[in-house]
Amino acid sequence: MLDKDILSEREYDVLGLMAEGMSNLDISENLCISENTVKVHVTNILRKLKANNRTHAVIKSLKHGLIELQTMGG
Image 1 (cartoon, rainbow, N blue to C red):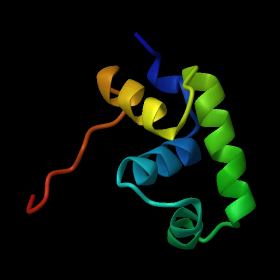
Image 2: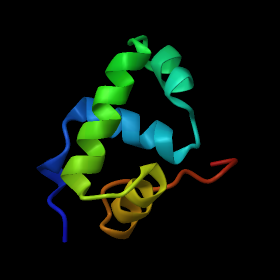
Image 3: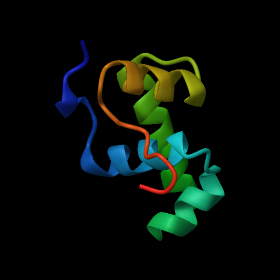
């Protein structure tokens, strides 16, 4: 089980948007940060979750209860 404190608040913001399928550019525009900063956060997320790629990070975070998917319409 992964500890919920493994990621920073901003990394959770980025991870949540990754789970919605957003690109780095979309995430940077949504969070008003540079695309390079998003790339740094993604790299940190992958390292901390020991994930091979973005999809793997999202799946692991869902499996371990770090994030939840929002359903459409509520």
